[in-house]
Figure 1 (tube, helix red, strand yellow):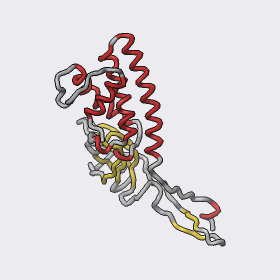
Figure 2 (figure 1 turned 45 degrees about the vertical axis):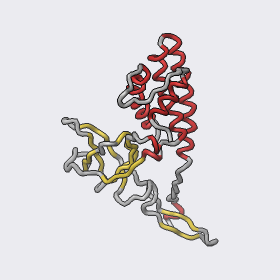
Figure 3 (figure 1 turned 30 degrees about the horizontal axis):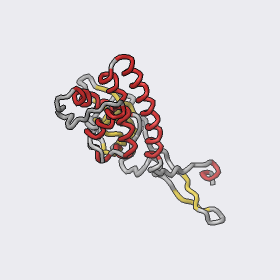
Figure 4 (figure 1 turned 90 degrees about the horizontal axis):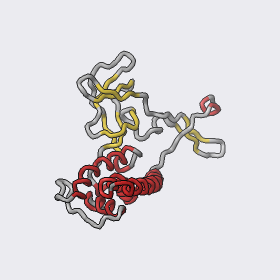
Length: 222
């Protein structure tokens, strides 16, 4: 698996810089290492926020903060490592659609799912006066599915690594190459990053399967 240094050296290679870095935390002393140390976490976190990556998705039971605004029954603390809030769920939810599914059988014996409930609940993500990040919702004992800040590169998928290297290259091009040439190279690298992002998100999404049970009128009325 690629390390942070590997990803930085890939990015430098994308912009044609022959230098290699051996450390970015702390930076080894070269200009390239200084730039990588500054831009790598920015590029990584921005890319993590652009998609609900499977390797960065977590579920936790939220810590209650007691009373909330009149329009919301409950207030919860946001996890410290939360980057992108995806869904507020009932505490025993196994996925977004599973709760409440019952099975019926047609005259031919085929199994039919009925009564499937889409479980994610309405919520607001806000900041209190003291800076505390909170979630307001009407879900009691809520569970949160979210994208977390992930710094461990060993869990990154190969396509995520490739996308990150191009995204980082787009940030490094200006400081390393400078001038109009640097701006043009940054634009080229960003185009490559967007291309790789499309491939990476498709691959990541293909590794999940969700069964959606439709609650049809003719079945519920029987």
